Amino acid sequence: MASPAEPAPDLSSDGRRDLPATNDPTTAQLAAVIGGPVGRHALIGRQRFMTPLRVLLLLAVVFLSFGWFAKAGCIQQAPNGPDGSLGLDWSGSRQYVAMCYSDTVPLFGAERLDEGAFPYKKSWEEVAADGSTQIRYMEYPVLSGLYQYGSMLVAEAWSSAPWLPQALQVAIYFNVVAIGLALAWLVTVWATAMSAGRRIWDAALVAASPLVIVHGFTNFDALATAFAATGVLAWGRKRPVLAGVLLGLGGAAKLYPLLLLGPLLVLCWRAGKLRDWGQAACAALAAWLAVNLPIALLYPSGWYEFFRLNSARGADPDSIYNVVTSFTGWGGFDGVLYPGDEPMILNAVTLGLFILVCGAVTYIAINAPTRPRLAQLGFLVVAGFLLTNKVWSPQYSLWLVPLAVLALPHRRILLAWMAIDALVWFPRMYYYLGIGNKGVPEQWFTGTIVVRDLAVIGLCALVVRQIYRPREDLVRQFGVDDPNGGVLDRAPDARVRAKTAPDQAVSATSP
Image 1 (cartoon, one colour):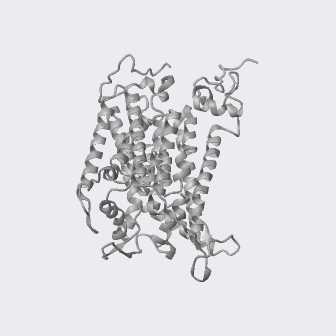
Image 2 (cartoon, one colour; image 1 turned 45 degrees about the vertical axis):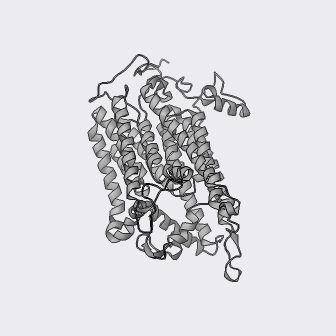
Image 3 (cartoon, helix red, strand yellow; image 1 turned 30 degrees about the horizontal axis):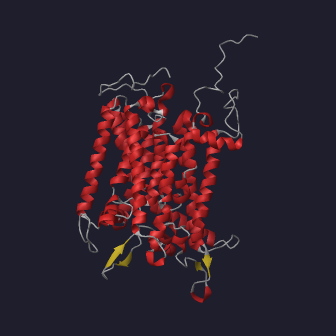
């Protein structure tokens, strides 16, 4: 019986599929352990259960488990309280020696969550080094603060159920927080895999990143990476309003997802798609206000604490400014600061440097021969923010992981950077331990910071190189433009005349 129409093409062995075991040397060596790469005549894409996405999520669960075990040492209990009551066993500086430190544990008491206090409403006095006192509130953005409060309520409910296994409430709280953060990272992996398109296996570096083991549960940044990754995915699916809502919610957890609106603005201007950017920006503002405005109106002092603290804090140990101080003895831009003083010059310098970074990224976006991809510009902006900022908390490196995978899918290079960044944790912990307690000198720690910063700068240089030489971009093979571009994908340049060269142009129709 003849078919009424031409049969649909069989894509089960589509030659455009990315097969890492055959085209990536590192993956090929790993594949040798399980029998080598897939055969030439294998029909790829017919597995109904163990799909690439499910394999990636399973891989992420394994590495998140490693991350939990890495932090588990800091929720050990011992009869060290009054009358032999149980308390956390941090004897012998366990949090540094075992390198299990997580902000979530001390913040349970420091933010008065152990008192059942509602964030931003509860205040307390904190004694400064000079003996003065200051009124303090929850120091995190609203969504992160509410997440901590919600986790505390779940931990309290667990503790009040006698038929459930019991432990110190702070230990239960940590596990509740960890479960939520693990789910957020799984969402990050899922969204990155969907955004990667035909190169779905690139997301394996998100699922199995060394940084997940070290920092997946160090703080609450997985919440922001989930919103940022899903925001990029929504934009790539041509849903600018949803993308804006997700980026706005991410900005209510950590401010960095809102930085992605900058690259979107420049790209939309170049493509003549400013209306779509306007929809995303308005949706982001509405989502951010929907979360922040009620708290700001009800508890203005508590809501403002995050902004006050970030303005008042000096250069953190991980910043390039502290690295210079560590090696040269430089006193900083503002000299000696006393409690209550703000590092105004440092704040101005960091802002000015970041503005220069944004200007450089804008210049690249406008003058590149082919319009850059969203992930490329997003990575450059976020990396530039971290490099010039006065604060680079160790877990902030998670921000770069999904963007780096989408911007520069060279697996060995990315794995090398992630390993370097993760290894910074070791001298960091032993520096905090103190030389008198068998720790390491400060320069051992700040020296590794220099290596990490150079690695990130190297990634930025490679991204810029591929922007100007798009034929070297693995994502753009087979005529692909921008899998995350959404309305920008294959859109002509409306305001910029493309400057193509024979070795730079990317064909839109042929490999």
